[in-house]
Image 1 (spheres, rainbow, N blue to C red):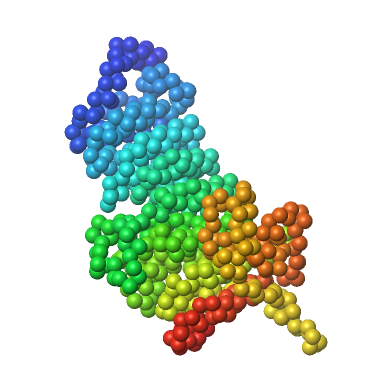
Image 2: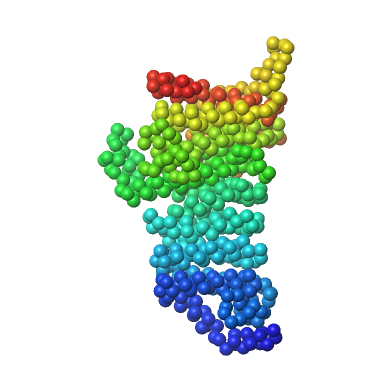
Length: 557
């Protein structure tokens, strides 16, 4: 072994390090096929180094310590003679940096396919120094790659950022590595959100995975990133595809006939709608809908429910537009998922509403316990309040067939499932006294909320914007109603949202909570609010839709 080490030192002394560097810097002169082959072989050498077998796959030699000692001297990586080496991994980063801007994107996608998978694999290495080096290298390369805006109709960002997602999906990845991935995502969004296009889909998938992470720290960080997205980067998230003038045309004009969208604009609009659905699903993944070994903190679920109202406001303001083609009602995981029994235009409109409505319905009938401080069924009641606020504030946007779909697929099934799954003793209460019944333990429905221009709500909004736990941006109409409803619920208010601003002034220790005899009973806590939605909708929306609403919606109810 000593002889091999001496031979390695002699070879190293004989070769000029400048020439070694030139081998990699000259990779820019290779042909498209040549650079792909060069990267493939460099990845193979890197894999051998990191596994500790630096001569694996090299014909005519067997694994020993000689080359390891030489590589250890070159890299000075601090892993020791027998440990993993990152010399070739470092060179891989350099080659990627050299070739990123001069190669056509199609060639680069071939280069990155193998390279990205290697980074994802190394990012989950059991050696902390190696895995962190790989993720940091990914971060630096991502910053450089994302500096150039993505061309329309291409998905190179999604391909480039995929290694981050692979690391999060790997069940063997460590908690500190998953946290580092989320930190990288956060940094990229803060700095380069204006250039993100197809990369949003990867980030939304990563944030969705963070919601099911066993670590509460990862869950909290994931939702914090989502909250910052809404507070600071809403404009980047809500780019309108096509011409903004399409939205401003008079309502009596058929915009598709007067100003038809090009095929490119249609693809853009479909992609934007698909990304918006991914964002909605990312927030809804933080709403606890079933029992789990590592349940989400209730505060995260309640904050995520506030996000749904924000998304509804975005749709209502036409800051995101529905897709123009490709609707379907069979697979929730695919684009264009909508309801049946609608016209083409109505079905496309509901493609961006359905993820929100279905997610809230799942929250309403959640089987997960969610009690805190003597107040029960918080997630279930919060989901009802969010759905109620959205439908009352933006119900004018829905046609009679769309209302029929919302009743048939969202509200009524959620109420039925929630009631049927309630196994609490409140259902079995009986008394010989006619003055006592199980109805005595059921809460009261909510009163109709104040109008959008209510002075009390305006005061609440101003106070909420000054609160560190609330969004700093102006609140939309539905989001403001949800925030006020949650403040009333949290502080034991009487349901009068015009006075919710007074509750914001109360200290948590001084709040007045009305203890319920059956806090975990869905029927006792959530059913009155859920059933109250039906009477609220009839009063606020359905009566204004005329005889057709009476003929179609009343039989459903």
